[in-house]
Length: 418
Image: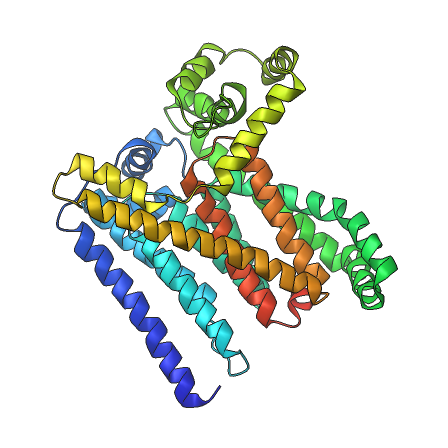
């Protein structure tokens, strides 16, 4: 790419970032909405660590702003915009060897993230920081700054226990897909070379140690930080309920009727509270004996349908904010916002599917399998545990960021292995 075109791309990319940032302040600072639900628990913990329920290191990111006496809304705007910058750095890679289409994809991804971001930027949430930090970790893993990638991954996983499960399951899914490669090996000469690379990738000591580090040590350390913060909290009962309720809402106490399967319900909370002293093994045994295989299949089918058809990200929070503050955003604008998010969601899903197919047909099998394994692991976790649409932000955007790198880096797998 010529120097002038590089400057033009940088200018355009920066302009979009500034427009999103300006829009977030313009839309939110005039009519501040106090934090509610889970978002209130994060803010309460930043004011008083003994009130910690969940959120990991996010509460310490907010704590300086809380100590300065800033409001929750203003603090959220500052922190979320910082993570918007993190995400933009993760998907922008200045290089003269990158094709024009990859530049356009990175711009489109920033616009998509920015539009969804506007509905969250006034909330003390973990979804935007988790998606941004995980995308940055993916970017750094394919660079020479791998130690920083481990730090970014660790910080992101402390915020979301589900995210830690994504990474713990990924290598197991990767290994179980190897028989599929043997079929390709028998039909494609070039694929046999890729299969040999995968064997070298799997049995290389650096690769094994890296897999253990990324998929076991880092996630478990992140969960350990969350547990430590929980131990110094005064909300031990709430913590105990919280540690179980996602399984109750997503599986044990979930109905199988679309579109409510896997969603939060008072019934799940009450059942969790009433069975708090019962071992989880006993509860699961009782559930499996009272539900047939068909019942469980119907539940999983319903949740998969919810996951695949969930497109309402920020629009839901604009609607909530409109109820709490009548002048905030007209109902017609919320409906338009939902339509835009629907198109963004479809475009991202299509990009992920087409990109995975492109990697597969180019015989970039290591990159293909890594991406597919993470996607399957994420969907599996969301199928079993509680599901809300905002949880997809931590799957779709890191996945899209990874595929952008995999498509434009001919040696992505080599970087991962080194």
